[in-house]
Amino acid sequence: PTTTTTNDDEITSGFGTPTDLPDSLDDAATIAGEATAKFAAMGGSLARCRVDFDTSVGDETYTTLKSSTEFMQKFVTALSYSMIPGMQEMRQGEMMALVQAKAELTQMMANPGAA
Image (cartoon, rainbow, N blue to C red; front, side):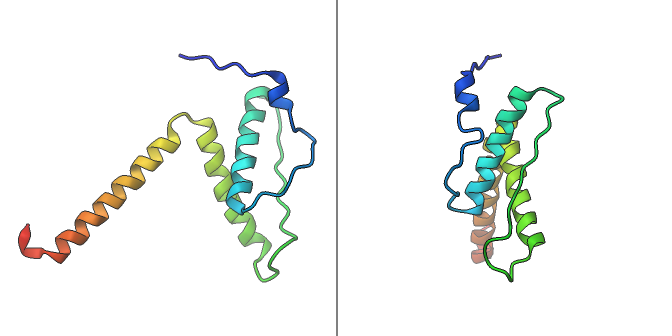
């Protein structure tokens, strides 16, 4: 097993400091997921964390529930990738296998007598 050491200044850098808004919902979820993973790593088992997601700005026809649900799906994915070693690579491998299988099926359907 490898041990990772982090500088306390590196971990606490930016806490409570205003930052620019992320460019997209994906970026916001990734930043929140990574920050939550860092907090969990340094906070211990009794630490509590709350992630606030402000849906008051933007398209008024896009409901709060829709935007919150989309954010949470992306946030949980980013958090999982940050906290579970190898998960992102495994998921990428699954996606590549799916793309390959679809390509092979398309080719087989285009040439039914070739099989």
